[in-house]
Image (cartoon, rainbow, N blue to C red; front, side, top):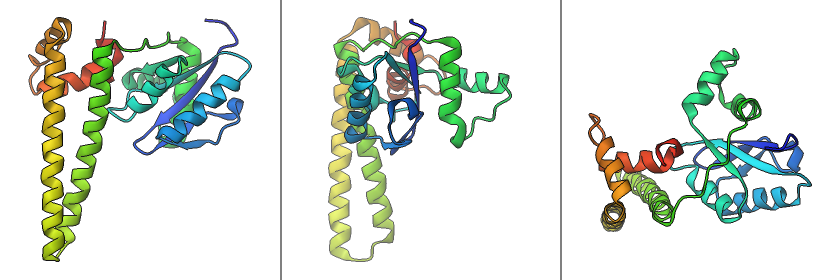
Length: 217
C-alpha cells in the first residue's frame, strides 16, 4: 500500500454512517442507505489520492455499504470488531460511540489492512438475501409493536395479514439461501462445520460466513 493512502473510517449502525470525513469534505454523518453510499463514492472518486474505506462487520448493517463500494470498485476493508476492540484496550482507549470512527481509523493506519475482496456470485447473492431478510424481520417487529397497541378490529386484521405476508417472504428468503448454500460444495462444508458448534444453526452459520470475511477463503 502506498504511504499516502487515505483510510476513511466509518462507524456503521442500522440507520446511519458516522464518517471520519474531514479529508473528503463530507458531513460527519450520512444515512446508511443508497443516498449515503452515493455521497461516499462521489467523494472518494473526487479525492486526488487513493482512498480505502474501513469499517467493522456489524451483522447485516454493513452489507449494503460493502456491496455499493464493491460495485463502484472502491477499496474497502471489513474489520473484525474484536480485533478493533482489543486494539482500543491496548491503546488505553474506551471504545464508545463518539470515539468509534477515530479508533477504527487509528487501527487501520496502524495495521494497514488489505482490501476485502468482493464476494463470488454465490456469496454476493447470499449477501443481498441476508440484507433483505433483515429488512423483513425489522418490518415484522414494527407490525408486531403496532398490533400490541391497536384496538381497531379492521386495523388488527390488516396488521395480521401483513405479518403473514412478511412471514411468507422470510420463509422464501430462507429457502433461497439454503438452495444457494447447497449449490456450493465449499460453502456447504463450511456451514456444516460451523453447525457442529453448540448453539449454531444453519441461518447463524450462513450469517457468520457472510458477515465475517475472515471465515471466507
